[in-house]
Image 1 (cartoon, rainbow, N blue to C red):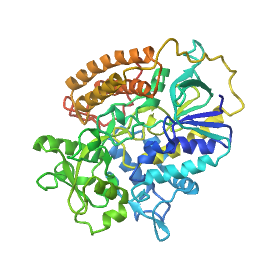
Image 2: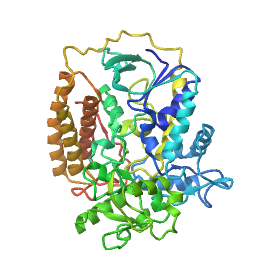
Image 3: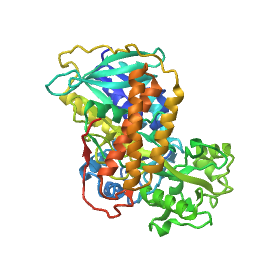
Image 4: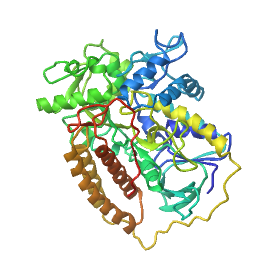
Length: 536
């Protein structure tokens, strides 16, 4: 199968690109699950944007949004990239609304929220299911767009490049090997223009706010293809995930309580009922996520408590049900009434700030390969993402990537086709002991949680590295010894991404943003785009 554009991933970045690209050629969108199982669809809070005068918060400006982003990024943001993305925010809102997204309004204006790290109310939202609203609107638009095909349950295994086929000329993409999960068949899908929009890698950790699909597939594929990867040590932990003491296992800490709840006045309390956050930062509960998550982690370890609490009980009765209906209803299903007692919470892995090194146009070190959204590392987020900048980034980069592709690789001017070998299953058999795969998955996630979490040390990182090397050998045996399936492929990708996180963390000899190590407490305020090129 050949397409002018091959898009891997179906969140705001992938679908925004696909809808616009279809006006210029055939587009195939691959997703290993269903479309509405992306990180975008799970996003609760909203999308940040400084709107034209008269529609934004009084006194808010683009310069203030830029300053907030740079501050949250702990001196590691690329200011030019930050400015580029934020200046296109108003265009993004116009585009999303044009595709059917319904943001909350008050009279004739958008209703704007505030979140940690923001100095003004600039978060557009659809109650507390903003991501689902955006994803649903994009999906409806995509399904009604000619020349755009969405293939669900199609797992991209590896990129096909001229370098992998032995060419000594410029390395460029030719397509991808793709597992059709319903049949077990592996197909070759050809394209000279491949867009990675696969999201992040939260499932590398035992406790995460991400859906099960967040296994770092795009980063792992790009790494194996030889693309540059950077700053993977910066994994953001969301401070406020519901902690259910009655539940056992990861599901006890997997439900996100949006940053917007704190933006609307909720406060963090310790087990004594004290607001402990001002002792860590003058902004208290509204400090950037890296500071708040570390404060919670420190408070829990200092007191020996299982969790801390998010208090909204001072709000009028009915407020939570009106402003945050999904959160309020879900908490009730867990047996907790947020209007009656504070919400028990703990941090959990949330967002990947590093990734495939990409320009604001999504270009990578491999010709024809583009990366946008969470899978990409552009310099926007630096050492810590400012809340609600990610949905904005995905849409802006989609527009910019398409413009760059049309300029450099216009459809109709494809490179001469090269022969691509079919996938060979060989003599491998279906895996007969999935319990081994699940055990390795569990070992990996526990290792990352215990040794490569919110607070790190070189000793812990070395321990994690030793365990990952053993897992890497076992995964190679699974990969080459059995017929591939989604479980094997996800484990393979997670091991690769977890290894990159550890290697990047070991190489950064400082504490900065969401990479906090007890061995290097000092911070150096200069931009250091730290790229690792070592291949497995």
